[in-house]
Image (cartoon, rainbow, N blue to C red; front, side):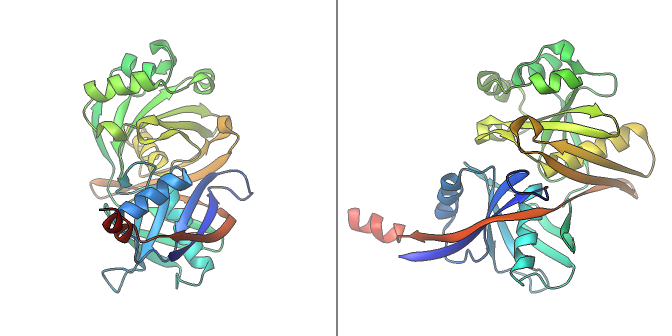
Length: 301
């Protein structure tokens, strides 16, 4: 029997029982790919991270991110939470960290209780999604989708999301329609079908309120999505012009998990780079005991 320590934290919040929960395995060496996926499904959170030794000695660690059904190239709240946990364990020396991930090196800054994650990719746009298709996926009417600034469009800084603006009233009424998502995944092929993720937002004074739905990946709704808030900030900078845009994004309110994401997008040469900041609260720590699955299968066979 092998044992592995884990820590759970609430991310993008400064109080327990809010924000986006995350499970972190700070010493995951010895776990197979299959075991990591099984553990992510067992914890049943939007993401679980597994920390491994870095291939490059100049980097802090290799971090693998799994949602309930697949490994992810990059995600926001897993990076914030993992950096925070490693800092509390004394494993993150200095204020600048670098995680090796599928999307590439992810630069992270730690300032007391706040963690800032720089997206690995420059901002990019993909094809628009038809308004009626987007509306059907989030349980709304086409008239609920605001198109004066932009139509629903694929945007990414490391993980793609279809971003669409809705009215403040419609944001609260949105609910994912899994049948519509399945239909959309066969029609709108700009992203992997199982990873089709829709990010809706509405203006709320100087802040933005947002919700994210990715039911085909097992996340019916997400409480805080840094990898979506960053391309939203970059998109608004692109539309409005200027050299920098800061955005205060409120998410998770409808779930009873209020989260606050502080985002920045900046023009650097011909590209736009984005970052997201947030705080964390530790919720639990423990140990998972695993049998040797390979030995078990060998015995059964």
